[in-house]
Amino acid sequence: MIFVGEGALLRRAVSHAAAGGHRVDLVCSSDPLDAAAAGPGTAHLAAADVNAAAADLAAACTDGVVWSVNNRQVFRAPVLSLGLRIVNVHNGLLPQHRGLPSAAVVFALLHGDTEYGATVHEVDAGIDTGPVLAEQRFPIGPADRFHEVMLRGVRACQALFEQTLPAVAAGERPPAARPNPPAAAGPGAYYGRRALARLGEHRGSPSFARATDLGPFAVHAPEVAEALHRVGP
Image (cartoon, rainbow, N blue to C red; front, side):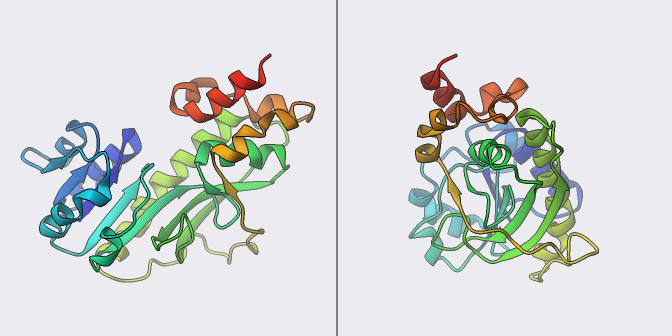
């Protein structure tokens, strides 16, 4: 299997897969140490555009599975035409929290959402629109702040990856990630740079302070930090 993404979440996923006996064919990221997490000699590819590296992915993959973990790149042709099963671990519930997880958390709090979570889904030609395989939900408390929800989302992503890895590796549909059927999904929404550009319109919201309290995630949410800088104090 191939992994595409960045950061600690990707590295933990790679390490967990290798420790579980799954062959890691290639890790596509900006840091070679991400591949080293699978063991010495694991192939690494620093691809600014994963779609331009389609031939490398096709040649490297031995089981037809590509994991997208903490990945900011969007899969397009020709990668989507290779016949690979691309599975994304998304920080947010789908379809109501599509897009940048950092932006989705901001607006989940601004909109008064009472649940957040993580989703594992198949990748198609859209952005976070492929079939959902599994999800893990957790409640948002009335006093929860951005950095608290974001951290729980990251932890849910890791837990959900570990739960669904065996089934995905076996070419199966993962079992339900929670014992009870999930609540009906909310309306679909996409949160990206355009949504953040309108963040100032919410300056008077009573939830604005907690929705924008980035805490230790300030360096990991540059789009939100930039939007807040434009809004001003």
